[in-house]
Length: 371
Image (cartoon, rainbow, N blue to C red; front, side):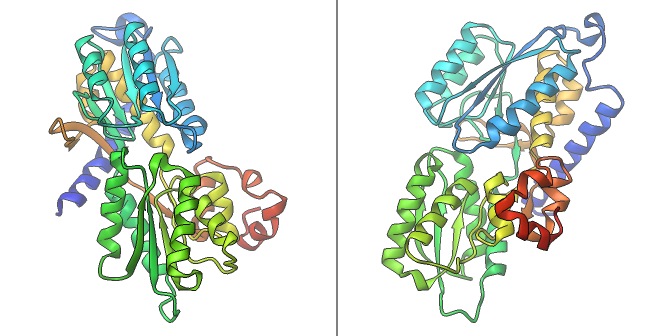
């Protein structure tokens, strides 16, 4: 079994074990405080630091799920303290230092800049506050990491893009719009995508997009169109949905009527609507409830000294630039296209058909039998 497949298998096993243990009551801290833990009661505080607001998932999905799960695991005695850095690493460091000063019991950290935050992670460690890296792998002495298999995300994007390209077309050039250089996930997405694209397509222009900015992606795409020519672009690799929106604006402004296949990631509502209308070819659906609930379970288990449960939730291992063999849980992902919207984001309760099928998209929804 390859190392990547081993990681995926272990991640799935850990997730399955998590659900199994929860079903047996082992992970739930819903007992009386005297029985819940040898070291901490249910009256705990979990600090939650999210990186930015451009990607709407953090405030619409991740944090609300974490908050609800912490409450359910602690008989509604546990609380969360939340802050969003709005893509500013200095702001996040200040937010984290405030949580350290307030003596929260544990911090879930989704880093703006994984390198810049390392010293603050060390401050938390020195204060006796564990830090779990969430979504993005932070540097510094973190206790665990929970995320999706990021190389697999890129592989899914690249593979789906190759399959979508119309080979008889005269257009033969690919534009790559990668994520922020300060986000370690962006590098992994790119590595995964390149493993599928290299040798199969011609990549004419490639950009690393500061702060995952849709506006910068739009500007970069306009630059690429000027160099390549709007009729020569076979497809666009966009690392996420927000940037895909900016890319589409640039293509429309250049007079492109029939859009090339465009990838995305995060299954944001506007992206799902673009997919059903044919503007965006695909997104990567990442089951946020599974990852967010796992993070909450890990945080509560860690604070309450439930070592067996914590180990069951973190059976994978990852390396950061500063630390090796970090306990982790990696969650698998799904390519989201027109064909499986009903079986993914609707079935999982991320969106209702009425959310997707507004008046503008009613005909497209009817064609796909979504409403």
